[in-house]
Length: 97
Length: 189
Image 1 (cartoon, rainbow over the protein chains, first blue to last red):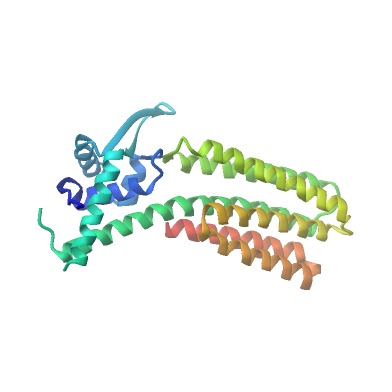
Image 2: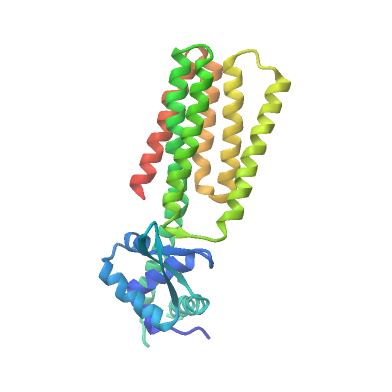
């Protein structure tokens, strides 16, 4: 039985996970890509990413591209699984209403 | 954790919107870069072909093709940096091999058919390029198919019905149209 996940259910985190899960499992999204796509501030996005990283749902890869620091984010297998479970749980709520 | 049906509905809608935006950002970014780069090459190249003659046109087209390809690769790489994918390298090699083989097939067809004038050569090259774009669109992004077919239709109309202004027709409607479409896709994204 699919379960709701309290960490993922928050709107911004839900949208972050939706974006990352849409990418190929081996793909990583740039921090600025997520910020622009979700229309959130740097601080807001950073805070939500930290929560997801602490839960083990995303991996943050900090690196340098052309001598500039860049963060690339991807969904972990556990994050993908939890997200799919969360979506299934939401769908079952609608089906049972 | 308790979630009401209306909250669940809102959450699912938010997920759907985020997924759609992501897919659009990936597919449309590639489409508009290709469109603008090809459009610029066509606009300048065909305008020159309409008004100039002789060997200089060969150099113009070769130069423009190199510039267009370089611009496409540069812009594509810049956008690609926003999503890193280790799986794209083998695909990129296959795409490169496909275009190379298609170019060889085009040269073979032109060599066998012996077109009688420049317009026939141009039309054959356009048909091969559009065929390649169609294959790319069908394999990687179905949403891009719709611009390939109208451009092909426009080229055929110009070739069959307006031979006197065929190159100018291709420059303004083909090249200009692709640039306008590329900018439109970019602004919407």
